[in-house]
Amino acid sequence: VRQLDQKSRYNHGQRKQGRIVSSEVLLKTGLALATAADKASTPLKAAKSLRDGAMIALLATMPMRRRAFVELALGSSFQVISKGIQVLLSEEMTKNGRPWEAPVPDILHPILFRYVNEVRPWFLSRGEQFHDVLWVGNRGAPYKNADYFGRRIREITERQINIRVSPTF
Image (cartoon, rainbow, N blue to C red; front, top):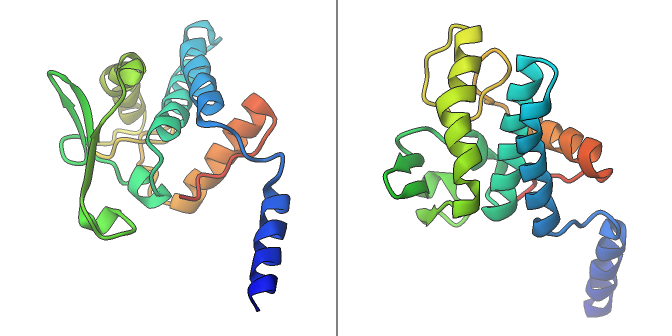
């Protein structure tokens, strides 16, 4: 049985070969996508580019479960404070049932500040939405479905780096 388990692990690794991407590549991809917003041909394309880049970059630096990422909320689990930005996950939002908190790396502050202060409110106004969920769709509705969010991340990464990266943390 032990040999079978080792073989099973080996095959699992083979299956993922060529699909594993370093967090550095994902961070650079997210930052590039976010900064490309300034060159977009329409306001909607610019907003989507910044939002999608911010999501990829944050996931690259702070991997968390899809559900927790989708449920981040301004003022509670995602706090913009004078010294920067913090992510605070309650025990219900973590796999191990323990609360978790960490500062967002400084390199992400400019794009996240811009998303929170400009892009997110613009999306909210398009759909006449009012809520505190951080990640919103094109009409301001929250990304409530973690499966949809997972598909969205796979589509973005495939388009940007030709590899479908799944946020299945």
